[in-house]
Image (cartoon, rainbow, N blue to C red; front, side, top):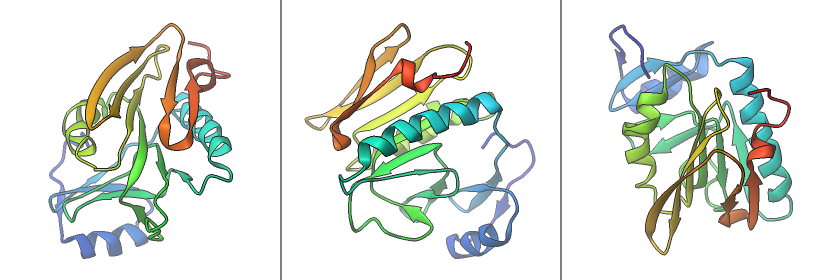
Length: 184
């Protein structure tokens, strides 16, 4: 989000047709289409570290881990591109997007962190099966995690050590795994 120019307006169907032909990624929010900015090498490395660790944990579980091109569709009003998403629902099998993730991870950037912490946070926490929404800093070793247990959301920050529990994968993800190979 964070684009300074006026967004294009279109229906959800028009958006999907437009996105298939576009060389850039765009997010869809209530009929407005926003071009996404490119990420840094650090941003990409963090997302790959997380996806790699979660993909290893997902093997044989029936869960799937997605990055980059697979969208997250929330109702008919929003389509986002989280950096990492995990779904364990076998009916969540659309070729272009997931709708029932259990884990969402955003690597923060200057242009998206306001939306990641406000409107996306609000909409993500409304997803019924979501168990973890994590926002990861590319500037310091810090992960902000919203975790659902017994239908209640809790919040915690990891910045020295520790790990995130990934309940839908019966696994954990340590800060060392998140920041492997990154000098921060």
